[in-house]
Image (cartoon, rainbow, N blue to C red):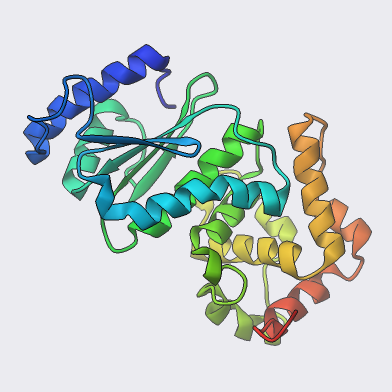
Length: 273
């Protein structure tokens, strides 16, 4: 569980970290003001702190800032109820040392979203070839949990997988299609109930991530009734009305749900409207 920070504590954390980064990664912060990171910027709902010039990742920051509007427009979720802190590192070893120092109980991952029930959401990532994907994925988690009191694990990951892609790749060109389409053509797929049984992130393997994405894609693009049910499900969560199982809601609306899902994966093409 992440420690709890109020705003003053978080600023102190940033100040301490700036000093630690100098020692760990020789970050060039001597010219920056005491108590700040080398570069900081407000990007929509995110306050970004970096140990490098944020101009290096300008396009990713613009895409990240647009995520809030993408989620609101696509899922009809409300705006985030709090600011989200985005901590970015130039080098992997700096990132890992920082996480070990301040969050020793958190599993080491390539990027992280950490949220305490009473503290601000925090996203951590470092520069590498999949940096933009990582930031969009983890920031999607942060936005969902800043707008909603809870999200089922599989759906949380499926939505993050969907929005981690650049906007022009989300609908037709996601690489998950290549791994799923041939299975769908032979009638093989994980049903939604199997995803709902996954209660721990450690149990989300590559297949679970792919199918979580696939069910989200189906609900958004495969059937209008499924899309409206997803939106209503999230609205119930936002209103703190017990939403029930999404699988049951979908099956009430779509009695042949599994066949529709398989058909969607097998036949979806760019020519579709």
